[in-house]
Length: 313
Image (cartoon, rainbow, N blue to C red; front, side, top):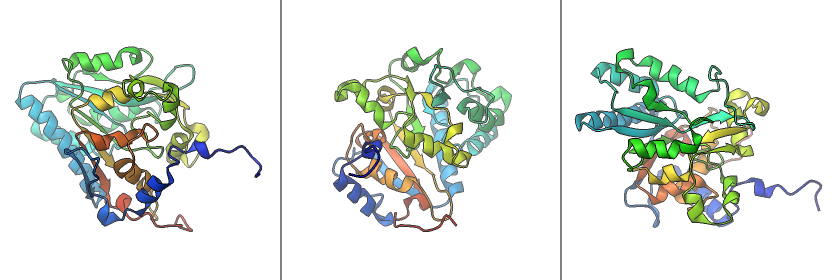
């Protein structure tokens, strides 16, 4: 036997056939439908980053504007990742002079520590800080949504975060959730290892509310790519939405933009596994296939997996 503890269960999926299938999907095949796909689920590819972020901004703006035209609240869950859509979205809002007093935004997640404290909100790592810097500060002040209608999960809100969404949406749930797919297969910070907390009972997992969670090692490594690979700088926990809100939304709009240059993207395999593989709590984002929604890949992320590559250059 080799030295060292067996860490193969570190990875979220051990279904070799499913992994082989996902790996085999060529770029020109990535938009194809699977028998288990929901009739209103679709996959798209947009080649250029600027075009992808403009398309995401246009989708967000259209939903916000339509709600205003219909004199109803817009209740949505927004991400910090991707973030490239926020500058063009702010530009559209300013150009239209569209007041956002009908908008109620709940953000997906925020970094935290084991003791329950959140990361310093002035930190460059804070999702709340990034959202204000990249989005809200770019909107003319008179047009911004009221501060009391913008929410982030944290110790003061986590126990009733789902109820806050349901209350403001009159029980309907969020109109739409925007986001991406993590290296571990997560949505928000709802990682695959959390499945072990539910004793194999999928109904309990599906009903799980927002929580304070430990991050999966793959998620820590994924996030450390933004810090030169320094995994010690990443908070080990987070506050995050859970399956209840993800599954109850009217629509899920996910955008995969994780291209690092040099032909490298960690999102090629997990993006395929989540959109074409088995639907399982071990790949939480895979549930998007069974519900109304869409996943849009950046062209460089949709490229054939190939490999091995021998250089980062």
